[in-house]
Length: 330
Image (cartoon, rainbow, N blue to C red; front, top):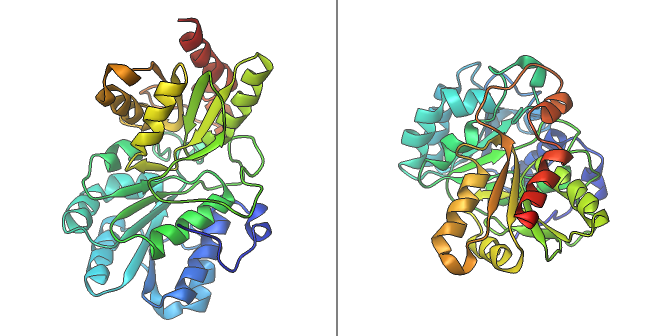
């Protein structure tokens, strides 16, 4: 189970997501000399600068060559290192998908693929720079673990868990900037229980369940407050590990509430929602609760500021509350 170790929560609380990752990355390098960092000409955007300053001999820039970087990471893993291969989400998940599948996951190597600029964080870059297909691509590859933290503090905790406490391929999907769905830091206590593969219930509720990961967790919490004002008790679950899913928590929610709304900054085709729906269906009639999917509805997004694209493509309170009402009134 991961913790902040020597760091206090306050040291991460006011940071942007990628900054908290960068700080913990350097700490992991301090703790374990096997940690090496590879980047695809994006050392500053991925916040590996602190690690590079402390351990220049363990820091490698491959230029804009993500496929080569992943292949080199595989070789370093075979040599006993813990390679962290970092880059922009759209570039790594698309350009290096074959190398992740064949060179890393097929031999089940201890490579950590870290992506920033995920979801719609690079909204003004347009569809070429949006990263909303990556979860579908990564979920289809055996042996890989997919972790999507929801806040700066969780970024730090998840980074340490993935690098130093988990053996095997990891796709760590970080949020790039300061905004985490329009809410404050979701963790306000020091005793944070984070375990890969185990969801975290952030709020109890008996009427409806809101499940989310990454940026969308903040939106889920905001919507739960709005639903409470309407007399609806909404359970909020942070599904930070998209693969493997916490099936027991999903089944419990399906049995104890009237339905599940999934929220994700990702294409709903192949994303968290479809995965949750499959888990519910697999249990059989005793837990066959309705599931509604809020996210990018299988379309290319427009060009614009991230916050505007969220509203434009249905990642907003209206969509979430509407989905909850559809279940409750159905």
